[in-house]
Image (cartoon, rainbow, N blue to C red):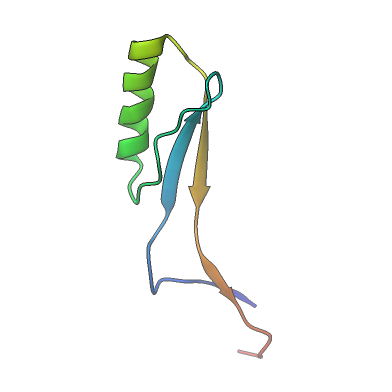
Length: 64
C-alpha cells in the first residue's frame, strides 16, 4: 500500500530552462519557479522550460 507522506514538506516544484539548463531551484510553492521562468525569459529570450513536481509517499506491506 502507498500512502501520501504528510509528515514533512508538501509538493516541491522546480523549473529548468531547456535551452541553457539553468534552474530555479526547488521551492515548496509553485510561485517561485514561475517567477524565475518569467525573469529568465525576459533576461535571456529563452522560452522553453521543464517543470518538475515532487511529492512524497510511504510504502507499507502490511494490511490496513
